[in-house]
Image (cartoon, rainbow, N blue to C red):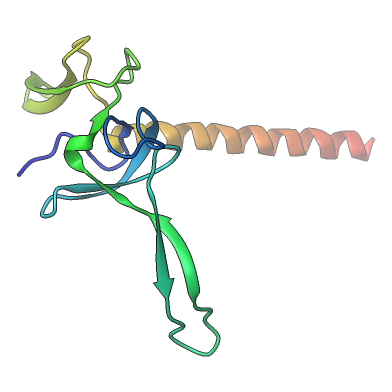
Length: 146
């Protein structure tokens, strides 16, 4: 079975527990065999798990982990219209002229950005932040030298 939700997507929990309903979260993992997604964030369901210490140094006890939700209980949020949407599929041509399957928003028709593309954009932003920090440090060291 194919899923319309991918790891890294921002989703809205549409049904389920009252305290989690209508809240957004990020998909951490997708299990297609069980048809469940693990989410973390405001709408995530927390599960308490009893953990036994494996070694003497390890600490046992009750830990809280991100729970899973059935895949039908979440809807991806479109980045363009910022609303939960059903997902459509379309084949488009790349710059190389090859056809590529993409997910589209059924409300506005925009392409839903895949997690790998958004990670690449975030990596570029992180590089820019590091450059700014380095330039600030060099400015401070120059002012201290005076």
